[in-house]
Image 1 (tube, helix red, strand yellow):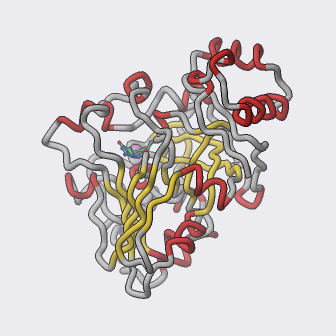
Image 2: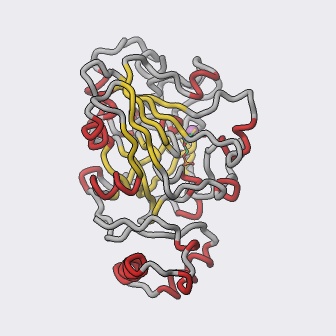
Length: 321
Ligand SMILES: Nc1nc2c(c(=O)[nH]1)N[C@H]1C(S)=C(S)[C@@H](COP(=O)(O)O)O[C@H]1N2
Ligand SMILES: [Mo]
């Protein structure tokens, strides 16, 4: 499939020399049923950054439902972010624009048949993308619903040809202190790392995200490629991944290495296991309104509970350490 990944703000129509790119972009706009002028005006009016679309309309995969809740407005979810590389406040969207997310290459290595590098564009064109509406629950007890665009991580795992000794997948975020100001702060264990078991990585729900709201991923969402594991607390959903390593050792995540009593490896959402400093029983939807009850596995037990049957059953164990 064709994939148009260059943010439209980089393409002044009069600067476009590449014919195929130009045609491709026109097709995108035509497919969306809007004219270029209108699209650009709409982008400016909502003050959202980097509007660019997938060349083909992205179909919703209805198997994963509609989240049962109102989708969080893009203007809200894209201006309330956790991306500590760019600062510890929620308002890092301007700082995150410094990220150079195109082109972007990911290294696949560790316990695999043969290590390789692949661009995000190539992954997208080889695997294809779909839309999935997922709930997201941050460990800080706010939540949102986002229509992500991505592909099953299982497809990438298949492509990587892991060896039988591979038990975990370790993900790593880019490291570039010249772009990400907080990476100059030595008290944090940069780069950001997260990990999943092989079963988790190949679960149907586990999504490699390359877009949201029908568009190529905004930088503050973790462009050009981030993970989404909707049954786990948000910190597992690592952003701007540039290395994926298959390993026989359980990876130690960024937050886990800072404070393992609060941010454990499993991090499965459970309203009955409080964070050491606050309750996890309810959550605050970013879209406003009253707090709502938090659900076991964030409501995705049907898809994921089977993976945890033989873990320690003591309350807390399977959710934290
Ligand atoms: N590299 C990186 N990935 C990250 C984070 C981060 O600070 N750096 N924050 C995590 C946390 S705590 C959450 S809740 C989600 C937030 O995703 P969002 O900003 O798209 O809502 O990203 C996760 N992935
Ligand atoms: Mo989070």
